Amino acid sequence: MKEIFPDVDWQLMWSYTEETLYMTLYSLVAVFVLGILLGLLLFLTNRKEGLPAKILYWITAILVNVFRSIPFIILIVLLLPMTKTLVGTIIGPKAALPALIISAAPFYARMVEIAFREVDKGVIEAAKSMGANLFTIIGKVLIPEALPAIVSGITVTAISLVGFTAMAGVIGAGGLGNAAYLEGFQRNQPDVTIVATIIILIIVFIFQIIGDLLTKAVDKR
Picture 1 (cartoon, one colour):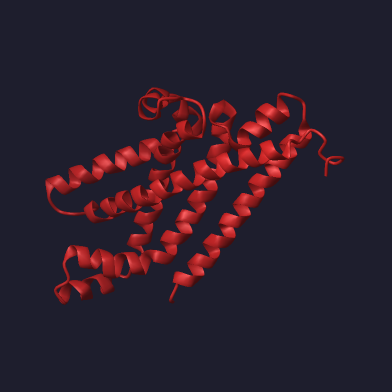
Picture 2: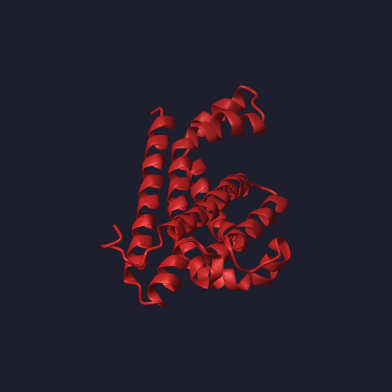
């Protein structure tokens, strides 16, 4: 292995991999929770009568669309002051978490909203006719019926987050992006860049396989 990749420090590469997984998994948990809540809010307030619901929908929709539209590399720079306040530093894996979460949560929220919209309205109406309240409908109808699409959406989001962590690594967040660009490209060590890229691809494939298996497991159709 040393003959094929002479410049690769495997212990350091494992450290970079741990940083990438740290950023991805921690942000993924937060994105899952926030995305469900935002998607649910968008679904429940969309096309509802009454001024408060319409105002709440448009405020949420505008925020989601704005943060979803800002390129990640720009967003992480814009959030540097907030990041410094929240985590006390603007470099390292922890510093990347706010930007990762704020960038991916709106994207996932829209996927969750679409998943809820695809739930058969007849099932919802049947639950209402039997006296089910809002929380019962959410917990017993909406989420179970939309679960395959929700799981599929979080799989896509997880893969996007891996890509975001690579971009964050270029500007000091660490991880495999840092290895590929700073250690590999800037130091003219192409084997380091190749190995970092291969590890990123392996992580993506693992997320995709796990996501596909979970989607099949929860899909009862």
